[in-house]
Picture 1 (spheres, rainbow, N blue to C red):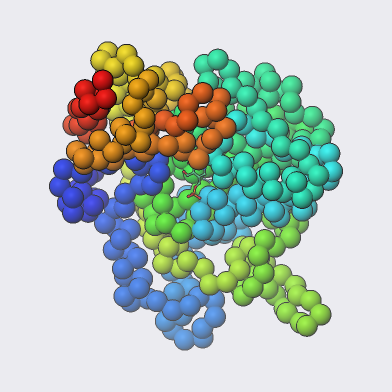
Picture 2: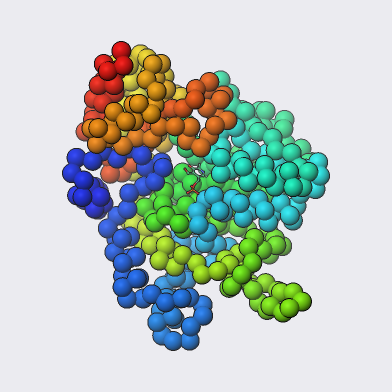
Length: 397
Ligand code: PLP
């Protein structure tokens, strides 16, 4: 698989273990975007000349391909800048449609800031309250407490498909069922889920599913919001501008049909086309095999840490819900120092709060180090990280 990703030829010896932050890009995605700019570039939905029709065809073709992969319709598949923008869109627009003073939005404590802050902003605007499902001792969601927390005031529930810190799949089916039991709308933050698990929005039966292209082999600056049509139809636009209108007069405007109603301005056409190619790449993968590979590499690291690094604390014990991501905190090496030492050996890992400061506070650490194996990693990459960790321990002892 590594041969499909030109970055490894450009940097011989590179060990990239930061795929939860962003994935590397296969040649087919890079080539597709190059072809778009070289042969097909024009603005979409506007021109009456052939080149613009070509650009519109490849842009909309990409949407259709992604929609079909998600088992969604074209109307329900909205291009955004990424997960963050998709969640902000839902928070602002659905918030305006649904929220009244005293209503509640239920999240979990294990959310990325992108799935906390937009809800805090909108809750303040509408006099609603944001509540958080806590974790059990084993750092999985406390579903009993979740069941106690939902009530007739719960209007929206939003949670990650896979936590970017814990590397585990949340029990999304149970959470969605819980939301339905009180008639609350559901948003799944699929930023991590989309790269590791098959996503069928009809099987999930969520109201919204948000993800970023760059985590799933696509370019940055493009993402997707799946939304249930019956809600999207009723929701007010998120931004105003070109393409999202039906008619504009000096006295007011009316809105375009879905999905254009939520896509104001010239979209990221090349990004959308590149994301379509990324989805074609994913279609050629066996996601079950890929996940087993990532888990095997993660387990190899977990075993080595337990055997040789008693001062390194793992943030979670792997279980069947785990995707192989290893988040850890050392008793005397700051994660930034560890990441810097890794870098001197061409090993890229993530260090910091991972945009999950509330979770860091619960763990009682300012930051952690994170190793995220993916399909282009192998055992040698884990060995190289372990060697860097030995080096760091000697240096800081
Ligand atoms: N949600 C989760 C779980 C994430 O891991 C990330 C990115 O790391 C995001 C949201 C935000 O994604 P983006 O910055 O691409 O919008």
